[in-house]
Image (cartoon, rainbow over all chains, first blue to last red; front, side, top):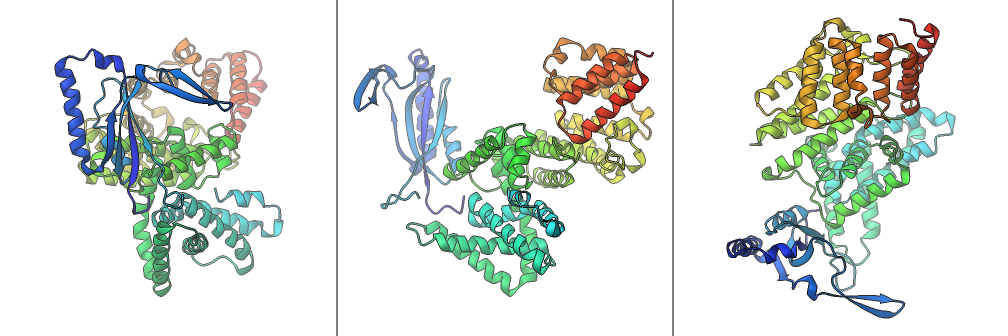
Length: 126
Length: 449
């Protein structure tokens, strides 16, 4: 809120209906791809990292229960929308992160914007 | 917020008047001071803590040394010094680069204030509207939930205490305290910017601001709890902020719908506010629109409000606030209650109902229809399931029903309905009005026709 001295890192989590992607025709799939290219161009150097995730059928969830490792097949939560990819971006504030998030193409889902805690070498929050 | 300290320790009778004055000064100027301090420090918490410290100092000193000649300036200066103290104490901790930057800036302002106090105060006054607007946009950011927006705005700009806001929204105080804490934490941790948004974001942000301002106006117009019906300072604050918004939206190349609704909400508030001196009898009892002395309506407010409605409607983007303002303007035009154009009002409520799908609007429409076409026509609308069900726990629904029943001579049913309204009502002045009606009807007795 103060004239920001350091940029903030935000994770833009892309939740969408996986099955919708499976049925996209070539042209629609091309538009989604072009949308991501447009996003990357708009974000420029602000994009720190990003990736497309394999479908949730390939996911494994690891829990710890009383010191025991409990491994289950599938994602943490089974919902209509799944986490399909993410971008990590560096922005001045939430408004800027929201503006970028709005550029990410989704078929029927949404993008969640999560601020990332940043610490210095001493472990203090920035 | 800061006023909780006063409420908590107000037993000593001898210092009571000074305490009351301190409460008044804080109520009036805390919003301004908070907005400026957040602008300077970038922290809601630091700004509030500093103001709290200033309050403690006022409580210690004013009863002994007397009230300073310019309490608002004193408040601002003291709060800024307290912020500097707090930053100095904390800045020794590791990694406080940003705090140090803020500290340097505050100390610079402190020196400027000391060398040229008059100029500094003038400069401050010019800055203030901007700071308050920034605070308003921050508190009403769409990344906060709606309840939090209203609560935070009332808390910071309106200077309402947490228990007061909790009472206004019928939730326990700890729940409201938690809501406020969560909202402030999100502002800080997600870094919601403290600024007036750029042009391209204004159309997206303005409607939320209008909604919050109107809620604040209403909280002031009919204080939901307590002995007083009105909190005029809240009404004034809402109008003042709406005026700034209208100015902003007119200046910029905004879309016409946002512009028209900003004018609509300001017009609506002004037209309601014009009746502020007519709503209460000298003994504090509530007077309905038809019983008010229209000579005491503020004609300046009415002229400004009516002109704004016309100006807004010329933009040809009608919205709920404009229609409500148009209804208030029709009322304002009638020099005597009997001259009110109820058919036009009922028609306008019809338009409003189609825009909002709100049962409360339908309730008002039913009352207007009763005035235009007779009590029985209105009662028929009130008793339809689409109104009776959603409004079963709304005291004004039962009060309106009671009134129409009374007018149509069904005194037994009217009594029952007034009692239902009384059971649901929390405002002392409204309760007194309902109790009075019940006493009147009981005196008449039975189902006199």
